[in-house]
Amino acid sequence: MTVDVIAHIRTDLTDKFGVPRQSGLVPELGGTIVLEPPYRNPDALRGLEGFSHLWLIFQFHRAARAEWSPTVRPPRLGGNRRMGVFATRSPFRPNAIGLSCVKLEEVRLEEKLGPVLYVSGADLVDGTPILDIKPYLPYADCHPEATGGFTDPLSAQKLEVSCDPVLLAGLAPRQREALLGVLACDPRPRYQNDPERVYGLSFAGKNVRFTVEKGVLTVLAVE
Image (tube, rainbow, N blue to C red; front, side, top):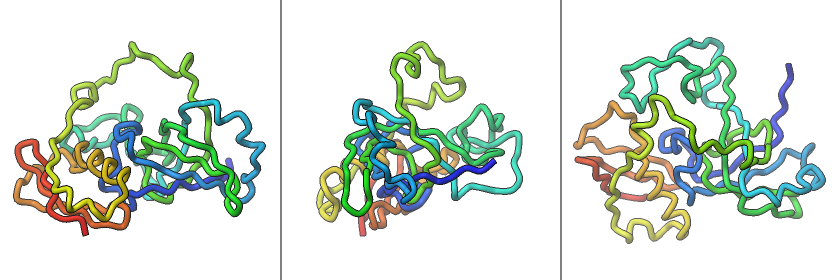
């Protein structure tokens, strides 16, 4: 089976550490989807502007490996509990394929790149290969009664973020909101809880350093 990469997404997150665990958790986090040359035909996107959200099928290109395990250790469960790989969204799968739902902000026809998709709420690292794009259909895809299994108790857990506004001066307004949203989602693995440890996160070309203690994330520097 041959699968072609149809596009790549550009985001402010250049490293896996800090990427939201699911799409939509940080609505301010934007992304730009640039189609590969063979697919830059505006006709291929005709009618897409009428949809508010999209499904992105992508490759976990930084997690692809030859072997797979039937169980994985979800970081949100502390890294010491195993779950079946098909009961998780772990990137370490038989086929390193992911699914993400994003909001479509705009379809813009650009002179050099052809039709470009501007999206928000992305949970993808910069440069992620996109394998397919499909419209989100509310009448079929939305299930308000759905349950989330072992993830239900984790869905609402967020950190309080303490950050001097001066530290964010080098970022655009939307990037500031996106960064604060990323930090509030607690990028640390759940098993790391050392209040003395200084963490580093790469965002929009900046190195963000922070600590976490008693539910409060304190930004130390944005360099």
